[in-house]
Image: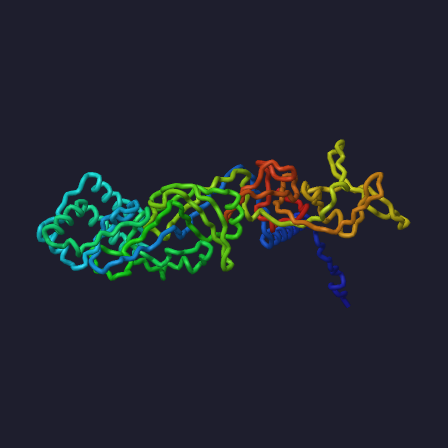
Amino acid sequence: MAGNDNDNIRRFHKSHNFNLGTVLFLGILIYVIIVLFIYFSSDPIVRYEVVEGSLSTQNIYRAIAVRDEHVVESPYSGYVNFLAREGQKVAVGDIVYTVDETGRLGEFLESQSLLENTLTDKELDDFKNEIVDFAHSYDSLTYSEVYSFKYSLQNSVLKLANSNFLESLRHAQDEGGLSTSVKYCTSSHAGTVTYWTDGFENLDPGMITMDTFNERDYDKVNITANELRATGDPVYKLTESEDWCIVFPIKEADAEAFLNEGYILTKFLRNQYESWGAVSIIRNDDQVFCRLDFNNSMSAFVNDRFLDIELLLGEEKGLKVPNSSIIQKEFYLVDDRFVIYDTVNDLYYIMITGYDETGQAITMRREISVYHHDEKSHYYYVDETIITAGDVLHLENSQDVFVVKERGTLTGVYNINKGYAEFKEITILAQNDEYAIVKPNSTYGLRVYDYIALKADTVSDDQFINE
């Protein structure tokens, strides 16, 4: 019987060749995936180069004016005619207005054409300036001021048109038999005349609240000429002193800075006039207000109760850093007598209680980093990773000891010049919503062109920074 051919067939196992290139490719791919995962799952550390600069801040406020003003009431009933122009200064005994008790005066003057008059060049210039001032300060958001301007202009026109009114009045009294019906009313005090009231004439600056600035409820009542007024009705208002003040709400954080200024140069936005005001702070109803007192320029704003102002504060210059770089960090406070400075090696160290291999207490020398020295309290600020509460420090050649327990907080940034995050104290001179100006060249602080972490919350102490 023939043999089976299958008995001579041998099976060979396929060998698996080791491919080094494939392994390397897979390894690199896995590494890239891990790096990308880490990158996209964490905030990248962005460097910021510290430069010199200053802050441009907008210190614009809406203020309320407070003056020494009182309302004068008419002792007669009748038709009132003003002889003093609004905003004009009058002396004691000057005629401010007349009261026609019968109403016949106006009719007689018109019939005799005694009210006709020409204006001098100066009077025309004054009239034009009043219109130009209003045009420059006009704001559509406060349209109601148009009506105040209308009445003010009306009184000015009457005053300008009636510069010879007294002569006409005397003629009317002689010819028209009006000698007893027209009363001449003079000022009992010297001051500046205005023809409006608003209920704020006796405003106490110390009692101002935020409700005082509610202009929706503000009611300015204009006193117009040639109107019938009863006995006791207001006829004009007199402001006797050039001393006046403005009050406006501020943030608590600005109160001390404003007080330190003493006097602040103030620009009045309506006419760009500038004047120095003496600073004081008012606290009322959990709100802080700044008061600025002036001894001039009152007459220029005598018709304004609310004013838009700009405080021209001096610009602080120094190192400009983003607010996002700034962080608060706690440290332990160490009496500066227990911190020794090694001038040879340029380092600080302390003598601290430690333990040897047998557990016996010994005094050891430990190098430290200091971040601030408070010359008033005589404390060094030492990193909490070097010492901890309860550590006992010693003086060399002395029995005095210091127990670490108190902590303090410093404001600073993370300096990354050396390739790792190092806390540096800063002193903020000025700050707005985006940047802070810090004191340059301080002992433990920043220098111009230092690199810091743009976002302080993306780094931690001594973290290595990959370039």
